[in-house]
Length: 270
Image 1 (cartoon, one colour):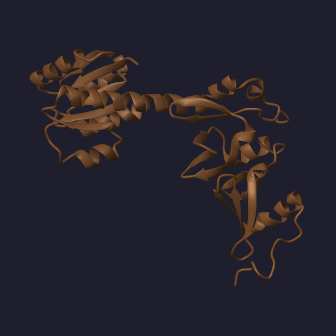
Image 2 (tube, one colour):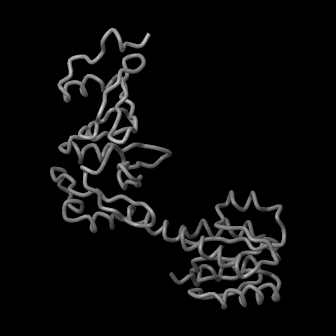
Image 3 (tube, helix red, strand yellow):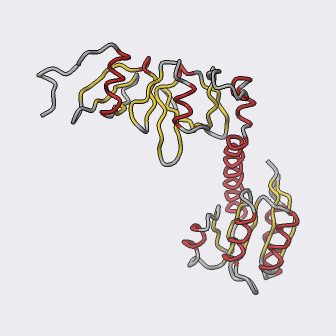
């Protein structure tokens, strides 16, 4: 993956040194240099780099202010702070800098930074596929259709920089966690492209049932139903993972599984 890099430093010798290191590394295209914050903002808008090596102590606008301006203008652009001072590191990472390297830096340190930047860009690209609907196109006609009666035969989900097409029978459960919807199989976890309620709608004829506001379960993968506290239950899934069943979903689950009442005197909780 070719990285287009912009160098920003108010010291010409520092820019020359960094250029020398970058030119010795494959798949790097230096698309410009700037000696001030104002010039950096204008040049970045013109050349649209993937990655900006940015000094913090600049004439005029400081590097932190420049970084905020650049990141506000481009969601794709990445910032690496290249500075002689370590006292700005916390603020730099609060801005979401991809790396923070201290001068003088070695070629090996720059290589590690470039590898990290490539990984982040790959993740951003994959996430953008979900937002734009490209995963729908890859998954087939059923996904691109607006007809809600068409149910999913494959579920596009993201892991390790790749888009995977999962069969419903592979899935143990789906869960909402930390703002994302995760799809859990017997061997891995994937990030889904839909909210949980939409997955529930699309998988309703594939033996999936909502057991909790944060869980959607493949009932064909359930091995045990265990009474828990205050009328709630736990499901033990294939492989031993446990999933909660909140009280509001217990009755519907029992009806689907044709269970009258699995509580007995020996298993009731006090």
